[in-house]
Image 1: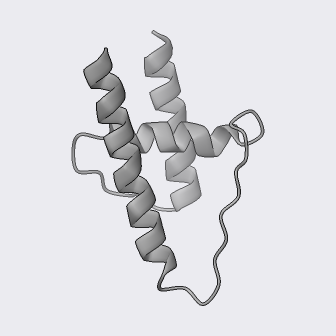
Image 2: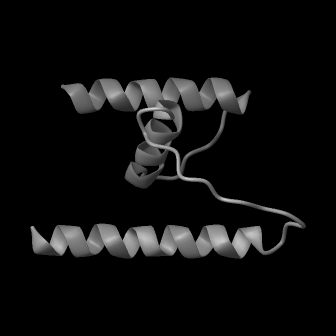
Length: 79
């Protein structure tokens, strides 16, 4: 289990580094902590994004695609 915790922290460090690098290209950017209780959609999408192990192509409208993919992911995880 210790290895799993280390791997998750390493993944999070990479994501944070990527976010900070992308933010450096913006004129203004701020980050706020919002509990997953109040931001469930973003939480589910983030978990889904971390689980992608194959190339994914967006089809049509992003919000429709993201909603569908997140819903499918939740349904699969509940099985």
